[in-house]
Image (cartoon, rainbow, N blue to C red; front, side):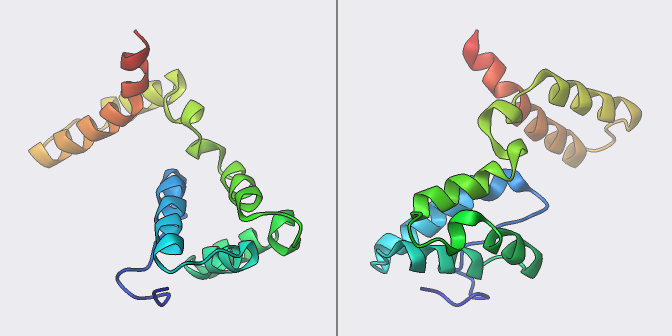
Length: 132
């Protein structure tokens, strides 16, 4: 497994909780590559690559210290701590309204800002488009 600060280490950005799914997917790939099979070891490694605050929070999860709880139980509990990362919260009408409102008060003045707005809109509105 890579060291905590190595470029190949998985990263979770607590400022962007939506990155949690990618974080655990990256960990799963590393577990396969390095043949990490033990649930306790997986849980220990999952908190290793986070910042101190996140590490403390995740270690407080009931499934972290309970050897009877699996790594899958742990990841489900952790993901549950970030409701905004769940699929049903990523594509909501209030989020879309907030995006439009935010950009109404700060007009787009450059191509870079337009691209940023487009990316935000695309990830906010794409689920609605798929259900039509």
